[in-house]
Amino acid sequence: MKKNRYQNIVATHFREHSSIYLFVVVLFLMGVIFGAVVVNSLSFTQKEDLFYYLSQFFGHVADGKNIASKDLFYQSFYHNSKFIGLMWILGISIIGLPVILILLFMKGMVVGFTVGFLVNQMRWDGFMLSFVSILPQNLIIIPVFIIATTLAVSFSLKMIRRQFMKKLGGPIMPLFSRYLLSFIVMIVFIAIAAIIESSLTPPLMKAIVNSIK
Image (cartoon, rainbow, N blue to C red; front, side):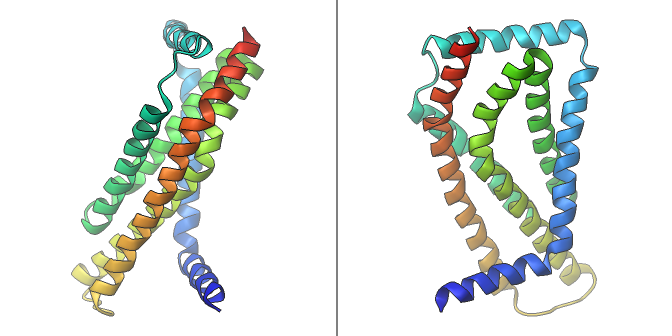
């Protein structure tokens, strides 16, 4: 009974915010495409410099000198939870609406650039490296970022309507509580993604790098 109630709440949420979700997903994909296109605009020297540093990193990975799992977990968790926290703050700040969308676009751009650069420089090997180093944790992180962006945009729009269009609606505290609780749940998923990134990604990367060598 409780399970059905939660499923109904989730279904209602996605139905009510479907237009925002569509916009956010398209915006993220545009960021990915833009990041991949930027790779082609780099000069030969810039590509060579970036590839040199990348080769140094892969050399350390192959020699087993990668960051300790505990440090990698904290690094990943801190970086992504900081992003989620910033989204939450921007959502309640009203004026942060355009910044929320810019941040998501930049996240997509980083993903697109990373994958695009690896594939551009290393072809199939680059695709395999991006597959094992980026995909596992991002299967959780990207949906969390998209949901966080949608919730922040939705909450910001509701606050704008209250402040400038005099549409009072219901009391603000229940809405704020749900907004806060949703982001706390997303932090939990960010922790799960950090565990995957720190425990699963390094050995997979090492196996791919050693097979290339």
